Amino acid sequence: MNLRRVISLLPPLLLLAACSRPSAPGADSAASAPAPPVADITSEARAWADSVTDAMTLEEQVGQLFMPASFTRTDKATMRLMTKYVADDKVGGMVFLKGDTLSMRLIADSLQKISRIPMFLAVDAEWGLGMRLAGATVYPKNWLLTDVDEQWMYTYGHSVASECAAVGLNMVLGPVLDVAPGPGTVMFRRSLGSDPEYVARMGVAYARGVEDAGLIPVAKHFPGHGFTRTDSHDLLPLIRRTAAEMDSIDLLPFRRYIDLGFPAIMAGHIAVPALSGDSVPAVLSPKVISVLLRDRLRFHGLLITDALNMKALDGGMADSRAVATLRAGADMLIAPVDTRRSEAEVIEAVRTGKLPQKTIQDRCRRILFYKYLFLLR
Image 1 (cartoon, rainbow, N blue to C red):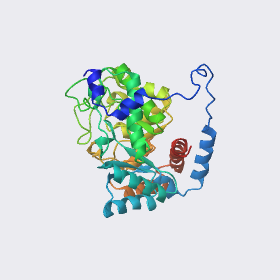
Image 2: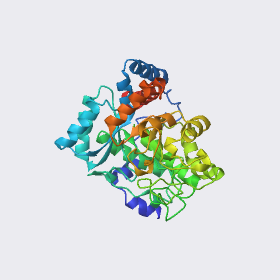
Image 3: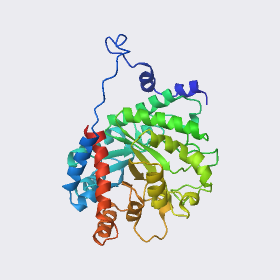
Image 4: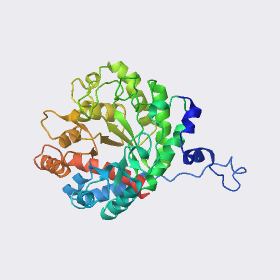
């Protein structure tokens, strides 16, 4: 699609953001002056995360690892359920599905007041917040953005994140870094294309815009969901690429994102035998998460699962989905089938020695570290 046509589809807010960043008085004369140093609050954030984690019970630490999903509605039944998640289950965040912007604002304010620790409130807004919430802006889908530049994508990400922030959301489940070869693949319309270099540049630009607007970008779906015709909502996709193909195509955008220090990645429900040596979903594979992502690619940020209620994870496994994903290396678990039961399974695994308590403490500290950086700074 022609760039001029794409821009014509966007609302005035995005164009305004792209074109009218006002200069401060005296900006021309001060243009060559060095920028003031940015305060490094890493030590401060770590100290807070350590202190809060050490003061929490095991149940509270486990609660921080969960992000149940909910429709964005304010009827009594939905509000009662969300209140239970926060007040009783002590969850660390929530993911929001279909609803409207006014309800989202009311829900966000209500939940943050109930929670002792600020919550991550996330949304899947791949083509704008209007994808989920009535009353918000809908943008072109990624497959249409074939000839935009990095400044355009930065402004796009910033605009989406700003609209999310206005209704109380603080985490965007994007950019999509999956490299899709063309029509017929499940991710075709959601992907930025078949060129890994282009996907990397545009995805990183979008993520910078989200982050500069104060929200957390979550790149997805590691290690790359593009080369599949199977939808993980229904079945487990099997990626039949070689390790060399995965490295040069699918992993390239994630490497760029990681090397630039972005804070969060979502692991996909996809089997990649070339990387794991088996047909275990990536989100459950220590070889993919702990060895490849953490050790080889040196990603030290938040590792978030795709929704645990998806059918790609159906099938026998020795542990519960929650315990298995934590064993593999995940930090935060999205949309479990039953949040309270999943929390109980993790607590039982710790108490019986199947899951080290240090694992829970370390994951909780990492979550709180990023909450300090993004929600309390």
